[in-house]
Length: 132
Image (tube, rainbow, N blue to C red):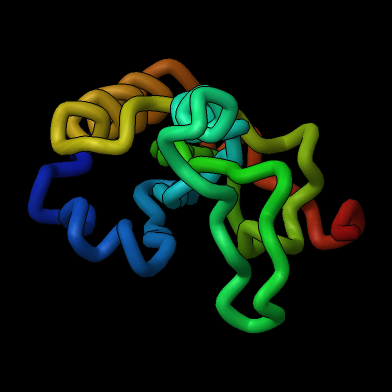
């Protein structure tokens, strides 16, 4: 079994803009930015204290009464061949969420290799008869 190497996956700068997919010996994988929109509690506290104003929507000019702040995470998925991510049933995918930084990418790479060695991906292969 050949390990997935750092040179086989994309760097953090790429993942900020695009998802990355690959495959190795019957296992498909994907790394992608996951975006959460959390309430911007710091800004709301400043607004309540009179230190800031509500942000304004640039398109409509309306005040944004519930301002949010984006929180980025790294999603890493694995699933058996032969289907693409979108065509594979959710119950066939394994998922891990990590920090969206270089350490998270390296931890994701280690997780991919662990999944690769812990499972017989050719045995888990999805039949064309079972396709969604």
